[in-house]
Image (cartoon, rainbow, N blue to C red):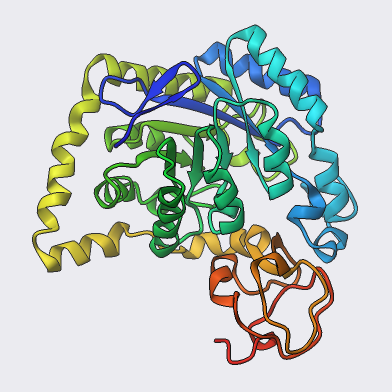
Length: 380
């Protein structure tokens, strides 16, 4: 793998400590004071970084997705748009939180959930920018992220190995080496049997120059502890003050006490030099690759595909191709005529962007319409 710097922190080489991220996300409940309490808790338990999320709702979602009724137990509004707006911090609020982190001497970072937000958070001069699983197939966003000097960390939940290979190609095309992939399963919470930790080593084997980490959603810290023994150099877990709070992420988050246990275990492994184990265990996978039948069996067990447990999340938050402007019957699709958004109904999946470019539509399409296969002449 190619080590790189996250701020002053070197990550990736054998002697480098694991970089530990406390994902606060939207567990702050829309409250700055709660966000500060979470930051303080992350610092106290020894995390290297806290991470939030930034969305431009109109760029991330279609109008129909925002307008749909949303009245479940985790709702903060009558519509999904009202719910998301309640939980969204402004850029000015992110600046305040970044300063608070600086005062506590802990890194502050943000996930860019759409192209507009990516452009906004670049001004924050972050140690790295995160691209979440929901945008790992958003190739337009990834192309922009690849142009940045800032390190980029990309989660791979809900994605296939083919999409992961495309992510690598996008980064390589821009000669970007300061990026990492995070093995991730987008199921909240993730059952132990669905965590597929051997995928960490499979990714290391397939992409030996790429730094691999783990973003976990299981209910306890123990599986994440095991991930570093398989070679994960970055660990990301959600942090909550109370697992019973309203919000879908709290159940798969760690309490400060659980997070402290995770950090202490990781640092103990480092002191015991146990993180050199992947050198030998990776040999096993390399050896398996010499046997075609064994290699196929290994890929069947831990190869990346969209799991059944991820289908609910993909249906709710997976990105589709959406018209960026009015398109008339017979018109050719170009990249500037397509956006990538969470849509209702779902459309052509985002990773098929380049399959659609150059094709022709067979009817008039209004702006912000999820593109369907039968809207495109001869498209399957």
